[in-house]
Length: 208
Length: 168
Image 1 (cartoon, each protein chain N blue to C red):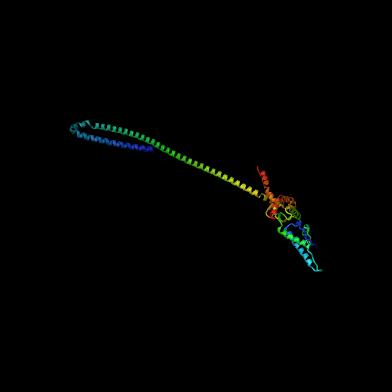
Image 2: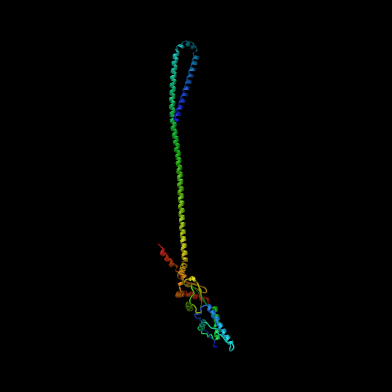
């Protein structure tokens, strides 16, 4: 599409150049005729006699043909030069546009890549911080859980140890409480009294 | 009847006089007997009379202290002694898981009077949660001789056994 547009520009430019050259040649031819007429008025009269012999119609036609050929040659050369310049300019413009676009795109890509890298770095740092925080929280929770379990275990053991005597006593009482005769316990009770005899005597004597 | 005043001797409690309740009952019985003898002395000839009976405990008390219950002076002396003893008698309280038999109580009171105090009295209580053994309470002390206390004192043995059993 851009090639068709360039061809159109070339054709229009060629036509304009040819028109301008034709106007210029006509103007020069017209102005030189009037100058000869003013400068050589004296010779004008003399030349008028022979002018018809020198510049007859054939000679004028020959001049016109030469002028036309020269004009066409100049127009063709200028058109060719213009076409070359246009092609060169177009090529340079294309190259320049290509370089600029490539440069811009590269810069954009570099910036985009930097942005991506920064975002990636930020995301990685954020993830690392989150991982560290999660790890710390996990360790803290693990430590707390371990402490709670140890404390609960200790409390359970203490409760069990404190109530162990009552538990065993309740079990013994429920299991064989009715089968323990006091007569069978007499020796045990007398032995216990004997063991606590000093304390009982001391208290009895203190009460006297 | 004899008019001789009883010789001072150490007061003795029989084995079947165990508690303050027994002491009060013997005291009331002795007073009733003394009244009975007094009423009998006041009765006119030909009137019927009925002497009160003495319990085994009273007879044992009189025998142990060499007191003649037929002698008014001896009775008066014994009443005075019992009144004085009632105010200063030492007692010990023992709780058991079940109601003890008389034989069992007799063994206990004999031991107490031989080893602790010759005139001590014993109060018996019930505490079913003891399972076995007894709880002794004096004026200022409470001594737990129950199986429960023995379990508590030796709980480390059970704890040690449990740890040995469940330690991997």
